[in-house]
Length: 426
Image (cartoon, rainbow, N blue to C red; front, side, top):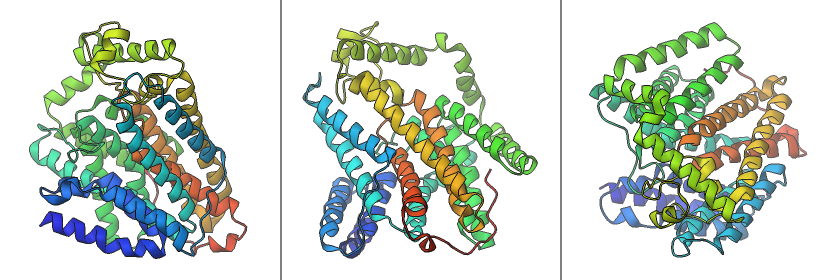
């Protein structure tokens, strides 16, 4: 039944993508983040829905009369340079039989990111995109949070099989990163009960992130919440909400969770932590001996025998930074960091441009929440291997389209909306 339902939804929306490529971009984002087909048990599980949507959306670029323009900004330039660089390093990969698997997936992802930047041209489509991103992972947060509370935190939260967020650590990073956007969409609704529902989803998402038992999520979430409180206009109110959220997590989680979190301070006694450090040394050695890095999927047992200080202690990168360093060398890591810095600066420009205009405060709040999401990804990602995760680049899409619509277009009247009170961000 699930297979039929998911297939009907996707194939039912595909014809609309021919007329409006923005529909295809939204549909691709939903499939790539939520992976609804990976929650099926029949024919839909292995159907290449993302590839089909990408092909249809590409065709619509030539058949649709909708405006299509990629903004030339520091972010888009950095993204194009990063794409060119990892394509170049793939030609000289140390694991030539494995490199093209990840290259194909990442290239398709970056291609659709650029297409999405091209076809989202107004505030309505942008807000729909934010809804898609927030709810695609927020529903996992709601489900995972309720599961954690009902089980007393004795079981970990996982994602759909065969996806970036299948593993508990990947799910944790996704939930932490999405949390600010889930809270933001609360400001887009007027219905009181719907606002309460989104508030519940926000709290459950935070609980689910902790229910993953990811120490990286704890550090990233804490950093993100401090940033939110510091920039809040109502520090007392925001502080009370944060204290309640933390108290709920403390009350729900069992002793095993606290033991795992406390191991952060005694990492030298933890085999998992020492394995990660060994993997980080491996990445440094690969990049030091190979200016192009090792290419995608270089973190293999075979390569560890060559470059790791402890050859038999194999681990994946467990860090977006060391993952890029090992894959694409110091140059690749530099481009990756420049892209992140440019995305942050874009958010700052949009915030400063919009914050003093009442009709554009929604955009200022969205830019700020996107920056908070980047903080969550940057800090949690320091301990997790998700350098090419769709969600991070979707957040970059939000910032680029905000700048495109509000700062770069020559018709500002197209973006002015009636002002109304906004929900205060946590």
